[in-house]
Image (cartoon, rainbow, N blue to C red):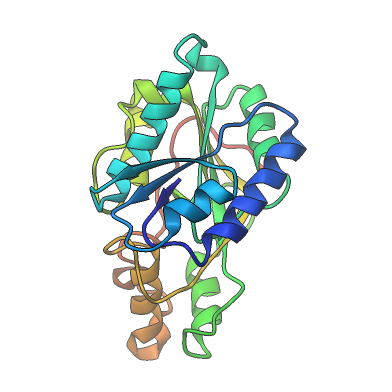
Length: 247
C-alpha cells in the first residue's frame, strides 16, 4: 500500500486490513510504502504492525511497484500462481470480508478482481456532491466499469505477466489492468467487493480520485453526465478480460 503523509488516516486503514486478514484465515503480509513522507507515516505504520519500506519517488505507481517487488522477493520460493496480491490505499477502509471474497473469486479461476469504492463523508464538498457522484458512478446490475488501485486484487503470476505496476503518477492501476488483459488474464469486475474511501479535496496523486471529485462537483449543472470532469477516474470503461459474472 502506498502512503504519502498519511499519519492521520493510516491507523483506521491498517486496523481494517488486520481484521480482513483475520477473517481470511490465511497468512497475510501487510506492507506500507512510505513515499516521500514528511510526517510520521512510517512510524504509525510500524506501530500498527505493518512492514514499512521508505522511498522518495513521490509516485504512486513506483510506490506500489516497490512494495510488491519486496513481497515477491520474500516469497521467491512460492509458486506465483499461489500468491494473491491485494492493493488498497491509505485513506481507504476495507470491509472484514474483503480478502476472503477476493480469494473466493481467485479460487474460481479469476486472476484479477476489480472492486468498487464508496464515499460516506462528503463534508469537504458542496451539498450536491453525493448525488452527482452517485449519478456518475452508478452502473446498475452486473459488472461495473471501474478500476481502482484502492480495491484491486491480482494473482502474482498475472501481475508478473502484466509487467507489474508502471512508475506512473496517475492511472497506474488502469495501465496494469490493460496489460493484464492483453496478457490473457481473466479479469473480474466484482460489484460486491466495495471499500470506503475518503473524499478529501487534497489529492495525493495528480488527476486521481480527489481531482475527479473536485472537477465533477464544480462543473455548471453539477457535472451530471459529463465525462470530461471525471479525469479518467469515474468514466465508464469497456469490459475487460473474460466474461464477468452477474451476482
